Amino acid sequence: MSQIDLALQQDESTSEHAYASRSQWKMMVSRFKKNKRAMVGFWMVVFCVTVALLAPWVAPYDPIEQNMQIMLEGPSLSHPFGTDEFGRDILSRIIHGTQISLMTGIVGVLIAVILGVALGTISGYFGGLADTLIMRIMDIFMAFPSFLLALAIVSVLGPGMINVMIAIGIFSVPTFARLSRSSVISIKDKEYIEAVKAMGGSNLHIIIKHVIPNSIAPIIVLSSMRIATAIITAAGLSFLGMGAQPPTPEWGAMLSTGREYLRVAPHVSTMPGLAIMFLVLGFNMLGDGLRDALDPKMKL
Amino acid sequence: MSMRQTPLVEIRNLKKYYPITKGLLKRTVNHVKAVDGLDFTIYKGETLGLVGESGCGKSTTGRTILQLLQPTEGEVIYEGKNLVGMKPRELRKLRKNMQMVFQDPYASLDPRLTVGEIIAEPMEIHRLYAGKEKDKRVDELLEVVGLSSYHAKRHPHEFSGGQRQRIGIARALALEPQLIVADEPVSALDVSIQSQVINLLQDLQGQFGLTYLFIAHDLSVVKHISDRIGVMYLGRMVELADKHDLYDTPLHPYTQALLSAVPVPDPLAKRERIVLQGDVPSPANPPQGCTFHPRCQACMEICKTQRPKWTEVDGRYVACHLYE
Figure 1: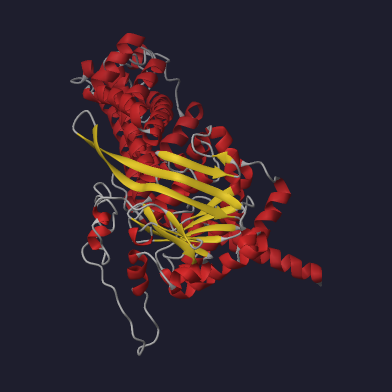
Figure 2 (figure 1 turned 180 degrees about the vertical axis):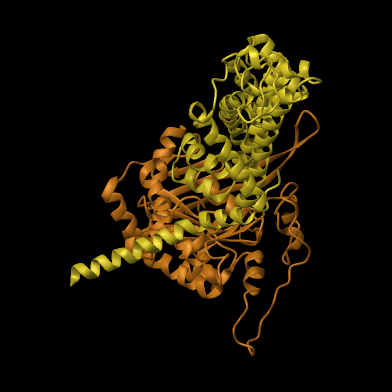
């Protein structure tokens, strides 16, 4: 009898707990789901990620295998997106290119988030000289047009996708640093931070356990939007020959080589262009939706 | 009265100035004297109430004593050790003996943590309990403040203001402190809830032998909970006395005016209301001499030029030329 009672009690408390801690999360998910544009963006991104993960299996052809007999052929049943100047299947190249674009976007933004949040948090939390120093350096970075800055960094580091990721990471750092600085400043004087100080928490403890978790929401939103920018920038750099080197199936590089055949075979550059548009649009709509779902009052 | 006179915290000449800067080079042109020279002692086991108008430096006093704000000058002697200028590492260890209960129960709990995590945090920082023992202690503390152990898994936003204040109190108790600085702990609550929280604080004091520095602007609340009361005006203490002495025979003209403002729940009672003229002067530019003299009814010539000394009169303290 008592055991049953105990079990009942326990059941009650756990279900209550589950309800309680999920309510905030649930509210966010339901807000997100109600937003049609956000859901479209979400599924676009999910689609691209799935394609990227399954690329070797879903791509009908080898993306770098050349076949000179079917150069620059238009879309057909065997090659739905047509073939390029070396007779490679454009669909397969775009599918494999998804991997590269997603990777550069995500890794680039990850670098920016890590560096930006670290710098922004330090400068917002401690203020004073560290703040002035860090933010003035960020201002210098921000004074350059972002694409030119990325281009300059890649020119210094040398072409290649890894360097493109680093360049994208660096040129996005100031945006993240500023955003996290401002959101850290808005919470660092809250009483719950003071309470942790009063109980003897070190600055590191306060930053890791309270400041960053409470200031991360706008960072998440900005990240999803910056991934879109990063993908465009990476494609742009590859378009200029500073990114992926042939025969890597990178969208920007494909767009660039297709340019020469724009009159005879417009599909060669149109198809990767559409792919870029699709992915970027997906991330932007996802980001907008996340912003509205995480905090309807957030201004970004 | 005399048997509980073991000092716990001695505050000597405590000052907290905020610089007012001007221009590109941030030249310091003046100071806001939030707390301007306090001298008093908090005895073990007592409740010292601190009252005054808003902006008189009550909260700053509490925070400077706990070293949450760096004092500009002065000493805070806790059990023989001066907290001012102590190394951060050493100070952090001592912090477990003095905790704070905050005014705003909505801002003082991290919204991302569960109540259990909030209460366990001080124990984690000082590595006092771990694992099952810690969970047990959290449950205990929740029950001590009148909540239930299943509340531990919820987030602060699911509680009412009064319940949140209880959570804040449980967190403060987690380290078994000696001193609790309560910074207007009930002013954000409904009147009906206020008395519950006040009674809880009193119960806990008996149970754990706590010492309170109770900051408030509500005179009846302070009267109810305090043993002694300090009255502050413009960053200085004007009077400090046993609560009965203070309420029966206020010495300082400011205390008299303040007490005359307390509503009396009897419509026929004759009241002599002392209405102060003018506003509180700016703490950046306090009046010469006694800071209260421009509004004082008993102002004398000497008040305009000389700052009254903090003097003892029959076991109580007052800073007024009338009693020197």
